Image (cartoon, rainbow, N blue to C red; front, top):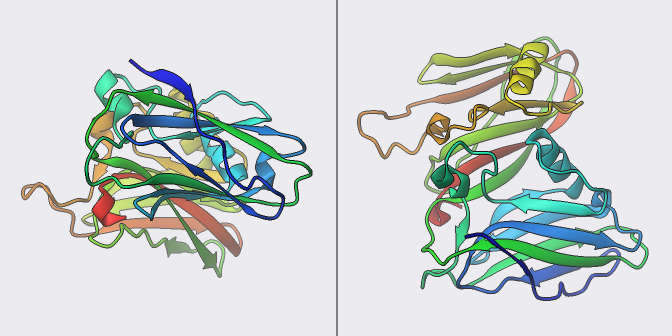
Length: 270
């Protein structure tokens, strides 16, 4: 059973500072619900870092996280922002909670969130959490941020995708923030597994009740809400090894882009 609980006070909620929230251990965190007050807006959250045992497992801005939530069909509210570790609209209960952060293990020493606050006047921040029963730490939902300068338009350009210290993960989505991106090709072991233009990619996602976002091109391996559709590049299965994984983007003009890779991963690979 999932419960909704108010978390301890967020410390140092001051303009142009880093606020911190230390989460209590023992329960399993499905999502965090952040309530903003004063003149505090999502755009003023310059960065959010979720840290597990001091390792960053989520890294994004408030505005970009809001876009990702909107794409996934989560509720939209100007003063409320969700940090979701689950898969809310999964087709089964097991897949729904894959990625939730279990803190009942002896190997979990800390779970905290850092908020870099911009120029807000008298900001307030209260956090609630959807939690479920204790479980040991397993695969966690990870959101990694990267940037790249695309120097030329109308050229297929490889986008580096990093998978942590040990390499490998289960890939859910790649969110590419670009006003000029027109096409995407994804290859695994040299075989094309995704080949789209923006209009068709958006249409397919809409058919699956997703909400494509202006200025973003999203590769969604689990668009049909099936956990088995995640792309396995862990190499844990000797009969299904990944020797290469390529993400090739085409833009209509040069652009400096930000992109996020959402995966299910283990803490040791963060």
